[in-house]
Image (cartoon, rainbow, N blue to C red):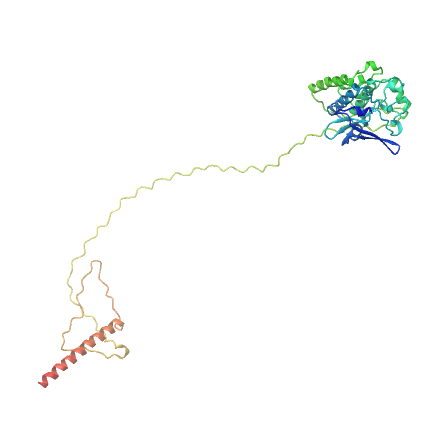
Length: 377
């Protein structure tokens, strides 16, 4: 019923509270994500740059509940949920959660889990919002260091440490925590409620101031965690190691090919003008020698060629005038002419013989007709 009265972004919504088969059940908002406890188990100490913003959302939700008069009395990492959307939800208000071993919720006058119980809860004194502040301080202590301040196999010893033993600083387990953040955690774990933060708003303002101071200084590299010496009678507990920084990657350029020889410029010889030629004397053509009359030369007579293809040989008539066969040769201006003789048995000679023979035969026949006419008269 107390949780059903709370409607806040950082509080898991309780829809109904019903009874079925003699057993009570609650219907709550469906959430996807992880709890603070699961984050610590998987990763060990959470860097303060990430842990503080998440933790301040839990302060907002629980501060709203305190204003509504509701005291949680069972704050622990498993009751603070981080959704996938980044919102933080506080769960299980005033509900006893049975687990096992040393984290069993005690019924009766003591309400809460032993590891996160305030001194006034251990002594069964009246509790108020400052009791939740103490439990929130132990939750933040474990969130940034990976350990709770008091651990033992005996619940009685743990409760006695809550009442009487000063808690070691969280830097004892994780040196990287800034001094201002570690001081705020120890301030919330004061034995006297009047020495703690009096409200969640005051706790949140202190974290804001130290967070801003550390951001101005700049983040420092996280040192390697040195595990503390084991407590007498207690087996050593494995301490999550910080991841060592990776060496920077050096990019080695690929080997360059040997430099190629640069071609040198060789000047080309300048062409020289050709040497002047000596003057040439043009030969003057001499006029041809005067023509000299030479007596005709007698050429040897060639035997008449035989008629081709059975043609009869035609002899020239003795009564007809005969033209000279040889002509005087005229000297040529460029030397004597070389006579070119045609073979007498060539087709041109044969054709000439046939034509001449035909003409002669025609004349003979014509004369015969004339004589025949004369005798007839």
